[in-house]
Amino acid sequence: MEAPLPGIGVIVAAPEGEWEPAVDSLSRQSVPPAAITVVTPAAPPPDPRPHFVPCTPETAAEACIEAARALRTPYVAFLHGRDEAVPDWLRHLARAAHDDVGLVQCGTLRLRADALVEGIALAPGLDGTAYAVRRDLLGTSGRTATRVTVPRLLVRRRSDDSPATVSATRAAGAALVRDTHLTARVDAPSVDTPGRGRAPDLVSVVIPVRNGALTLPAQLRALASQTRTAPWEVLVVDNGSTDATREVAEKARPDLPNLRIVDAHERPGESYARNRGIAAAHGDFIAFCDADDVADPGWLAALVEAAPDADLIGGSLDSSVLSPMYSDEQPVPMTEQTDFLPFARGANCAAWKDVLTTIGGWDENYRGGGEDMDLSWRAHLCGYRVGYAHDARMHYRLRTELTALARQKWNYGRSGARLYAAYHHAGFERRDTRTVLTNWSWLLLHTPDLARSPTLRRRWIRYGARLSGFLVGSAERGVRYL
Image: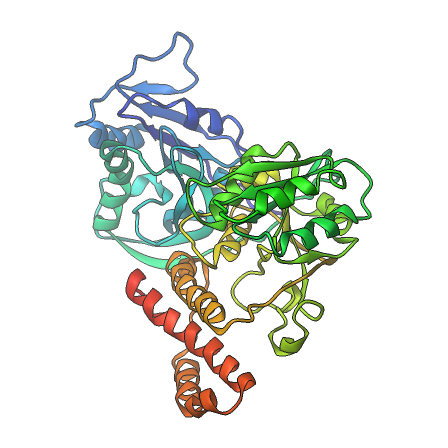
């Protein structure tokens, strides 16, 4: 039998006067807060749900500490006024809290003003994270307690919150960290989110494309040959093409009557184009594919079949048809991935639209790779189910030109360092020193391969470009990911 969960009161710091988003999210918690106090200069409504404590932006930090001490709950958690806590936020904090625990932290999903993802905060420091403290430790010193990190993204937080809000929310935690000896522990909860149990009402297929006039026709013909008979739509998202991409898409309308062209010329990047596609989609379930690949006839039907049991789904990539000469570069299936958490590749994946909206869409900071790993890992850490549909097969085209291949692998390497900087506190591990030395030694010893044969030259460039990307990305992110 599970032990009773400790009660948690919540302090909402709103020195700028906006507190409703946080309080509204607290009303949807699976474990309700024992008390809610809003620290704000705004006048309380006639029939307030929480207790209100007045402050100014200058006095908000001290007011938050005093409000926390005044509560009678074992633990006190803190939110920004514009935060949105996911429904299981307090449940996860309470499950991690025990008699010896003085501080419980969880990650936050940082969102831009347009509600798209800016990044994540998972570090054990207080910067950007959400947390709860044991109330009886406030105002004491010299005591010992445990600091527990829950590696989940349980709070949606605006990245443009004011310095007054940030400092007010940090105040109690900073005082406890200063005055208490804390030993660290990570508490990784299991994923127990149930599936939807229903099929989508309408499916939208989003294809980001930039100058894809040569390959797009084959993909559109493949989509016109899908076995799925229920209604669905195709969105060709033009990311600033200067060739005949739009004309090619228009010619496909007789075979794809629900085809639409979405303009996304303002900014280059697949993530930007995909986000524009999400915003324009009419469907409640969105599938993604690329303009230079070819969908198997049963591709969409297989993704939809998996939809009732998962929130985000990856399909399989098969390069044997479009790139048969590079059999050793066949992408690894999700079931055989070994990097941290399984991820759905951007060239073949699907998700419920409300899930994509909740986790902030595709991160536009990733360019040329890594954005699909980030999307899947964010979904995992937000508590969503990431599934795999092996029968959702996409015929995948590998790079043939060496310059294009080198650019792709170099970008993958840079993105790997960015991913490590973001996710290593959640368990994403870098390669050990022995592996790093082995990789670089192999590259040096096989330098003569550049002159031996096209096959060996291609292999060396693949590895060399990616390792070089690791170096550059590590310098950019201030991490050691070699």
